[in-house]
Length: 388
Image (cartoon, rainbow, N blue to C red; front, side):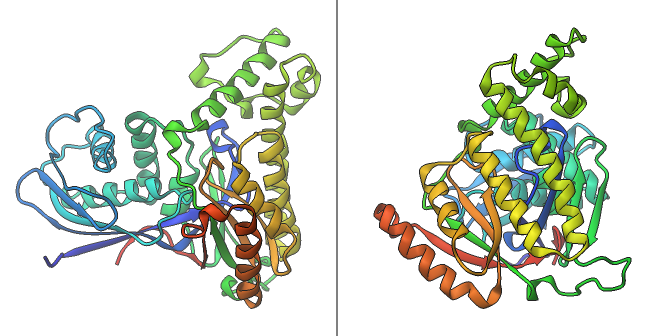
């Protein structure tokens, strides 16, 4: 079948700002040059018919009818996009579409990339004009309310707002964001092609994951419980649980109450406040062209993810510890929520072959069972989701 429209929705990586978007923290990110392709034609009726080169089975539903319960099938993401759009707009026209992903890797927010592609396609089919940040909000709502993942706006923002040679900096409390050139635009010495300075290594452990069934949502609740503890210990009014965020509580309150609360909750809060500081420092490092410091902060972020946020399988931790020792690796951390999935790194392009060879050798010495599934990929920052 020939298709009239083609959307490319990229995967994303987050070098700094791990596990804090759902607590209204600060995050950074890049869209990358691998992602999801959705080809489609607009139908005159309201049926949506989808095939995929990445998933088994076909999907068919009526876009004009109320959303049914989740079927725990890849079609749920299309239904989720329909769910969030129907809260705002009347949908009359469906599509015939074909979906294809370009990397079989967990930890790059493929689900958010797919959702954004569907939101854009359904909007196009129904003559709806959306600004990029509207796409972010609608796709995020679909993932939270329909798919059941209590995420923030990090994934969708990187995917929809990414720019090829700039770092996205997002405040998840105010939803304000900036695109920052490496090396300082104001000084007139910003770098025009960051891929000459670094590429992004994606090291797939061989394990797959499902965030909805991982400890991701549990960590969100633990962060909120830490916030509730701090409010209670300082005799402040409690907010409803879903309106409680660590960002609303000053670090000085944490410093006063951390010893009183259970250690698990104190560690979650420690990660949030230290990551807030690291993102601030990282943005300054990026603006001033200090890639070495930016990378070190990304390593420090992963350390806190392991010890304070307590995520990361033995496989991911092994990859991280090996890559820390390799020449040409500026920095890196777990990608996504850090439960199985992948590790990402900023690497010197001149060292790619050596990094892949040494990392593969040392990882498979520890985990030979992943010989057929461990993969190394190297990608570049790219622009956000778009019609091709």
